[in-house]
Length: 134
Image (cartoon, rainbow, N blue to C red):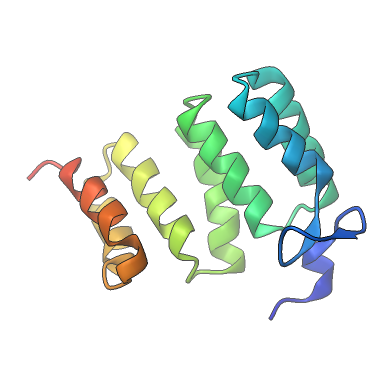
């Protein structure tokens, strides 16, 4: 589906549909251990290894938004994913979440409307819609 250059990594193929990134696994492990500094360090290594990898960008953007509480930086990475794959449902949800945090409710509704019909994300869409003031 994508050009192989966008999925560059360190040569392992196992867990994901793209080359496994040890740095990404370590970043997520440190995140679970609540070690923000090490987690961010390994996210940046993963980004250096695979700068156009949607999974790396999405994981790092979620980390920036939910753990580091930096929506502006999270938005940068989420928009990079949007440029690569505009129909990425999880990214649409993340962009909606960022828009809600930034109090851009109309923009959030636009992102949510794109995902609204997908049964898999119905509960997430409804949960985010509750956060939008009417």
